[in-house]
Length: 101
Image 1 (spheres, one colour):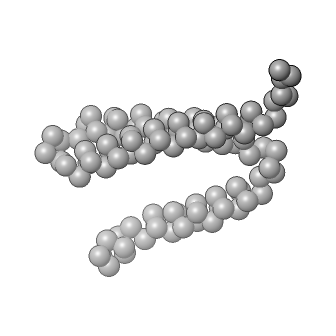
Image 2: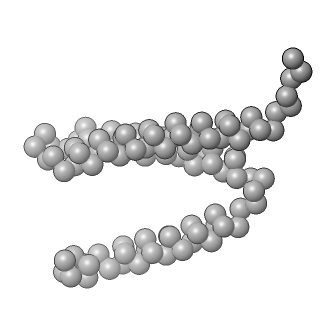
């Protein structure tokens, strides 16, 4: 395990830096822009789904780890996209004027 960490030390630093940068960027987004930002993030997750499908298609048929991880990425990415758009739709529905009956 320590050999793997030392071999991928630069990647680990980049991931840690991305986490802190993401927290700073998202933490400074005004609440008015939250809904459009979430819609954009959900659209980007569609790219993740396509990437997972491509990885699964190029994986060896006996590489069960890649196939299982790809399948999980497709399922979880789909749930994220659908759930995010449902939440965004509900949030936008709160701003619509109510019709009189």
